[in-house]
Amino acid sequence: MFAIIQTGGKQYKVSENDIITIEKLENAVGDKVKLDVLLVGDNGTITAGNPLVKGAEVVGEVVAHGKGDKIVVFKYKAKKNERKKQGHRQPFTQVKILSIKK
Picture: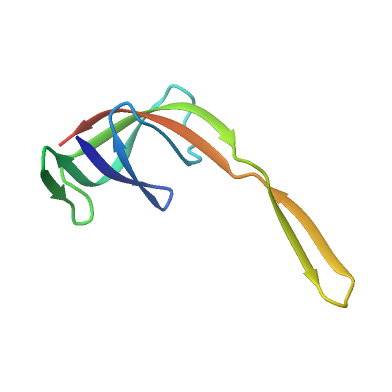
């Protein structure tokens, strides 16, 4: 069984016991979270929502919080001696999918 969920403006295909990295959630480590279900697939049958599947539920557990790899943002303007160097690390949350219910 699999499901397509939506969180943080992105969509993810998940199965039970998957660990996914999503946009940062404000929940503490060990908390259970319910995620929006857009589609559920089970043994060849697919149930699509409009926009969400009624009665379907994906429950996950927050495993960890962290920050991604650093990216360098370098802006400059030619012939003007303007340079700006910045770094950015995107915060994330790791969630383990515990159950998928239709």
